[in-house]
Image 1 (cartoon, rainbow, N blue to C red):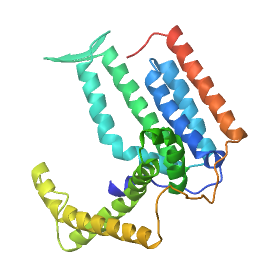
Image 2 (cartoon, rainbow, N blue to C red):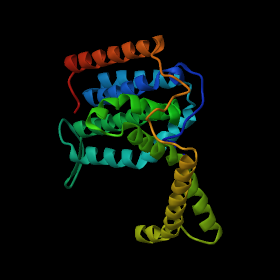
Image 3 (cartoon, one colour):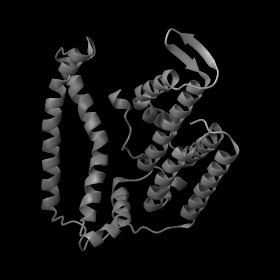
Image 4 (cartoon, rainbow, N blue to C red):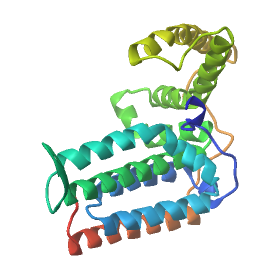
Length: 271
């Protein structure tokens, strides 16, 4: 399961999505997340699914990586689906036993919510798959630049957020390496009850914390040795510039939003 977590990884490519301005990708990602929650029926959600599928196709991200990004949230999907099925009432009753009943609205709500979560994960993952950590930092700094009026160190904030995102894959690899080392020494990390398995993970988290602090110290020392001083007076090798593809993507997203609002108006809502 650990190796299946791909959030925070960058997939090199030359697609139109890779070449988009990182600032526009941030804005559109946030806008599409809002659109996901604006959907109120299967027709508008279906339009969002079509847009997400088109975005994945244009980005040329392998389907295997997309499925890997969904796999870690499978437990959340199942848990959410079960809760909605048994606790949402309304419509025709499909199954009833004792105090447990499955209704039409409960099933529809469960399916609707699960699809919404999957689309949300894919849209969020596309941002990190198609944008390098450096461009993420620059984009965040540019977008948060108005906060400088309140004397907030925007560059430091953007750097912290990007480094945290960047080290997710590194920490995942470190966890897998430590777990393999513990298993080679005869540790049993997968059998027994919940409490026993939690106790068995203590020998994993202790060296992980030590390794994380050591890695953070080495990174800070390396930045100090290179006279890194933050955003003041800092120049960039790659300058951000909005292009035609960015405005085309913005137009498409606005059209999707208009379509979602229209479909919400003409068709009954699910939730």
